[in-house]
Amino acid sequence: MKIAVIYYSKTGKTKRLVEYISHKLKDLGVKVDVFTVKPFREYSSKLLHLNPRILYETLLSRNISIKGDEGFEPERYDAVIIATPIWWGMEAPPIHSFIQKYASLIKTPTYCIVTADLPIDYASKLLKILKTQGYRVKECIQVTELEKDRGRIDAMLDRIPRT
Image (cartoon, helix red, strand yellow):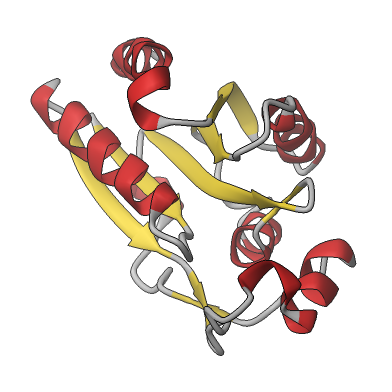
């Protein structure tokens, strides 16, 4: 089985999660390709959540120019995992743009993981967005803390090779 993991991370929280996911799937005998999707013009780290450009692109669900998906060919994968931080209740703009760009191209089962600090069900919101776009979503979970949520993450990853 071959899985593509697509993610964006600005602060490193989602990146650490994806590194864990990648190692866990490889331990299960799954071939994993990781794609780090980023905006062509990266966001400043200063006052990240008060950055006017981030606010504008996130709250208006703007499609932005992305990079990091070069070489991603959806038909080469048995499943896709999309991981994104949640900003102001929405997926990060680079992932939003990825979802839009590949909506009609990804035909395989899709799993999603959102990282958020608040215990609000953002996973259901992303699930709905993906299904509306035609993705075949099998499962979507939210991770607040890797250590605390490891059991749910592992359970989802254990199910993926059986799809």
